[in-house]
Length: 255
Image (cartoon, rainbow, N blue to C red; front, top):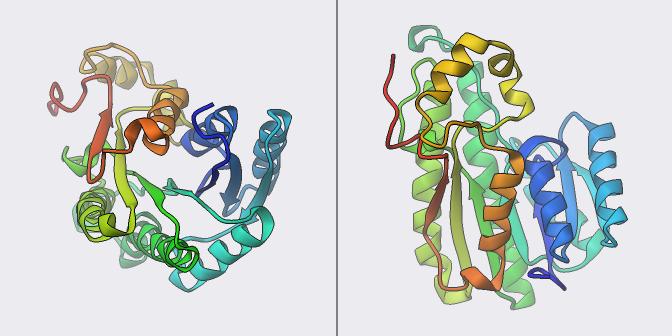
């Protein structure tokens, strides 16, 4: 098992990609802190799934968009499961609106969770690693939209573009501490956030025509990449973003 003896914290892991990463990490031998903002029952289900794999797990409520709570999140995680080795910044939201209609409140909500949350949770995690004099790994869950324009989702694209540069900058700054920082940029993944798309066959077919592998990704596809980045197999990678998109980025065009 690639992550035996490791403890990971995964934000936004009560469903979707975060859930898949949490379960895969457990299957690879890690104990896992599951965090959620508004789905306690789903988080409890993920914890039960992890425990069924023979690993320790706990669910922690956390609104990562509130920067002042980041230190408390890490402290609670350490108190429950011991020192942390891996952080996956997975929590993210999006809000659709034409650029000229974007409300400041929606802009703030997206940037607070997707960017500010990742920044300050990582800061608290790194402080923990420094205090315990241990190396660690940070994995930022980005999107193909850190590179690919996405009309009507400007704040989301801005947040992911900034997350890309955060990944690169922290990778260089933290390397002397033995801390690696990498990213994953998923394409179109079959998760609850894409429920409407999955039910709209015309739009789904149009999207599939632009994915060279001609299928949506599954959360397990992303979980496999995360398990690799968290493992010793990726010990010489830092500042890198892996695009897991079925080839979408290099084949996409607006219709």
